[in-house]
Length: 478
Ligand code: ARG
Image (tube, rainbow, N blue to C red):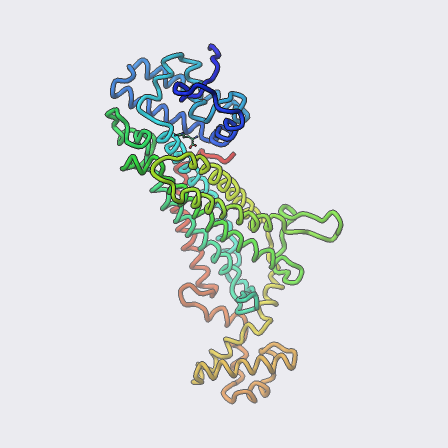
């Protein structure tokens, strides 16, 4: 293997090399190194196609393929991006390594293609893999939430509006609320995957390749559903990354809500849940402290992940057709957001798996705060009192309770009757938490029976989705 001094792949037209400062500014190898295996896969598929149109002989194609496989192995053995090579980007690096191994033959590989269609192909291959990994991570978190729901399908906890105690719900209902959000994120990702899964290779710089390439076969060989249909669009289309980031942003928002709920519930004032030592830290000054750092970081990362979406939106704004160097910035945004979201999903799963609910305290707080006032109103409605009047009466009962410092169910029947004559002894049964929960048995409600059923539905839906994700097993996060 002879070492040749790397020159820019476009150097022929230039008298002078780029200034060092500009070169540092322009080079993208430290970032796009993440796509080195994708670049090589795309190159192997491309070599086959240019052989099919007679640019390479069968023997040349085989040697290029073997050379690229060697480069792939070499790349996998490197601990980090080989920036000392001085090469501009990952495409240049792969080609340079090939030429090092094969001499002039390696220089034939770039026939009929451009870095514009190549980078877009690599980035789509990377994004496809990333979505599949995210789907698997989402599935793990959803499974943990479903497990909580199954375990606590009948255990009450308080639920809030305006962070004021509103009505009791089952813990299972709370857990499945987050599962429902994450199920939508999974569905959005699966939907985005279809549009990610188009192959731009063979679009050339923008006008299409001048060789009679079978782009349908090329797309199939790279596992894409189809080739992209308009070369001018495909050369600079980054909608697939934009959509993926939009889903990541929504998912991060959902995780931040989950984190916030749990931070509040874990606070000494609420004390509904206990976070494990595995996901908390202490204070360097105050020995008694146990801080919910894992959850706070999840809440905080949401800013970073959602700005990546904004970053790409603004990056794409008003770019004239077709490729512009602005687009080199696209990868940093998606790579960073994907990495952060992956950590958030995995840490959230760990938090959920290791958190315990204080069931007595949850029940006690679910019963407090006059959370059964709606029950009293409904009780009166059942006795023929119009809802508006019943609402007023229940409000007065709450005031009576506050005056006596008692919950509604501890008010004597005489005090209740004084507020409305239709109230009878049977009201006490209605005011229990169990009655409150059991009554909410319409589809989507919090009754233990419904939650039990919802667990089964969620499990079934998740397992069907997981079978799809499993078919991509073998992928791992760094
Ligand atoms: N490093 C470039 C990027 O990430 C590759 C494409 C270069 N194309 C070009 N016309 N200069 O976008």
